[in-house]
Image (cartoon, rainbow, N blue to C red):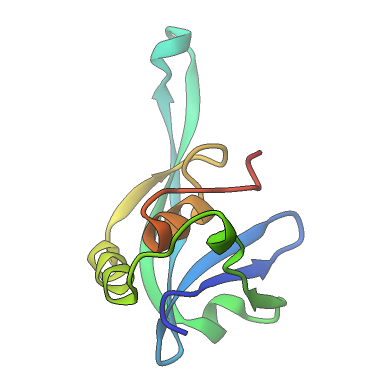
Length: 124
């Protein structure tokens, strides 16, 4: 259903997308990597990845991987109304976002759309 979270099995991690309807999802796709100064660590440089938000066909994103609808956080978080979820998701299409595995990943992105707050068990 529109607004559902789609979990896609990859070899070493799960990729997440949000179902928009009519066979389309919105998800974060790789763009590149840059080094950014981490103010907490002075002059050290840390990798920061960039992801682009794309609207793609579900079958294009899933390819030959196993996938499932997984709204597992519905037990602890209230989903926003579907129209709000879709409107928010569509507003991000084409934008580039900073990506950090432990703080701002694809699961955080889609759960923020669905619940209004980013959640990721992969990080915990």
